[in-house]
Length: 403
Image (cartoon, rainbow, N blue to C red; front, side, top):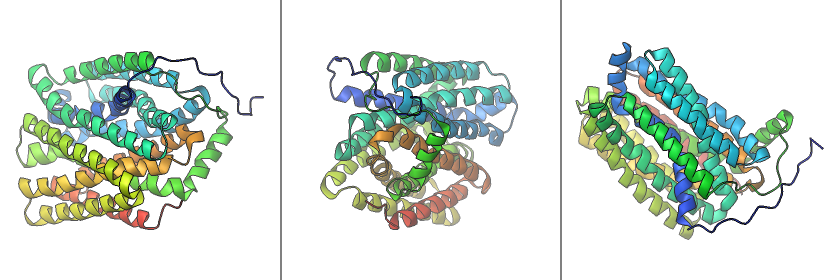
């Protein structure tokens, strides 16, 4: 019957692959969204000049991407619980590829925004399903370790991509960045299709709008999901506000070059790497809750420090120190809070991952908008956003996520 769950055929024997390879492929899937955004950051001023619009107007290319990226996950997650992970991921890669080509050919801002929306519709499938596939394959402490390793690997894409984007912009122009991410999608589709494929071999959930709404309502009302998911989402929202504010802060206020901005982002990779290694060790020794609370304290303290620095001494080195502490705390909270939210819900991992991704991207879109509009001083606006998000996350998790 259509309204009943149905089992799928037993999985066919698969080729044995090294344990590191699935993590690498999942990291590639998860990195699509941040790669597509971060590689453009050094080029935003040049894109504005090329399309004859203001720098503030060009940031809408980030906001619309994050909005579609978040909303699309609510659809992709339940689809994958019903039909499996393989085809939604492959279709997502294809849509992302088409959107990237559209962006590269855009001659005005409206066409760029359309292309970015198409890009986001494809990227949302790969991103949300990277977490769902991880939940298919791992659970408990193993899931926390897998997500932390994914975050370490993922940090290379958003960390080094601005440096690469700045170089491409300097040599070939900003349109070449879209050509590169299109090629990245093509490689990712082949790697996923050949080496990983379908991982959802359990009972398939019915594709019924009422049932889907009931699942989402149940997740929102379950403290085991809602509190760690909302906590993670606020911290990720702060991270994206930093990404979006960086060009205004470094290039326009601190007079960095695009290459220097890229070097700053590349440096963040090593901080997130250290945080990911630390997160796995802390989780193995102390569980998830203690390290999450410690990471939240670090993000809150560093955010308030950035706010004070912006009002007293808005220079690079104090900001760099405070931002490094924020990234360290974020790198601990991100994977551990995600694992805390997803672990109890293996039978609906797609929907849980989708709702988590939706919350993360909505907070990211809000953070990007606030960082662009809260103040004409970029560092002050960033300090306000980070402080608000971090303190709210700390207070929320203090209520306890349940067991």
